[in-house]
Image (tube, rainbow, N blue to C red; front, side, top):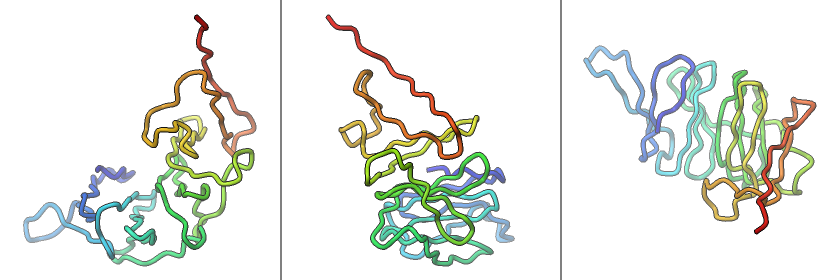
Length: 178
C-alpha cells in the first residue's frame, strides 16, 4: 500500500508490516526495509509533514520513526482503544480515528476532536479531508454491512460537522415512490 508523502519520496507499507522506503545507501540498493517493532499484518502507517513516519502496530501500540529510530508514543487516546486509521489533513495535522472517537495530535498527545452532536460512542472508521477544509467521517458503520459500500439514498444519513467550520451542508436524495 502506498504511504502518501509530502516530500515526494514514495514509501510502501507491505503486508508483512514492514515499510519499503528509498535509501541513500552506498551499497547500490535503491530501497531498504524498515521493520517497526512487532511488525506484522494489520499495521497502518502515515508520514506527517515533518517527514516523521507514524505506525500503529498489530497490538494497537503507536510508534513514530524519527532520525532512523522507532520510539513508542503514548497516544493519550485511552487504554484499550482500537486505532482504525492514521491520516494527515491539508494543514499537516495528524489525526487518529478510533473505536471511541477522533483525535488530533497536538505535539504531545492526541486531543479529543470527536463530534459532540453524534452518538455517545463514535467508532470512526475513515476520514476524508476536502480541499476547502471540510472533514467527512465514516462512523458507527453507517452502511450496516461492515464494508466501504456507501449508504443507499434516502436512508436518513447522519452527518457530523467539521469542528473547525461554522456550517455544515448535507446532501441527500429522496427515492421516488412507485
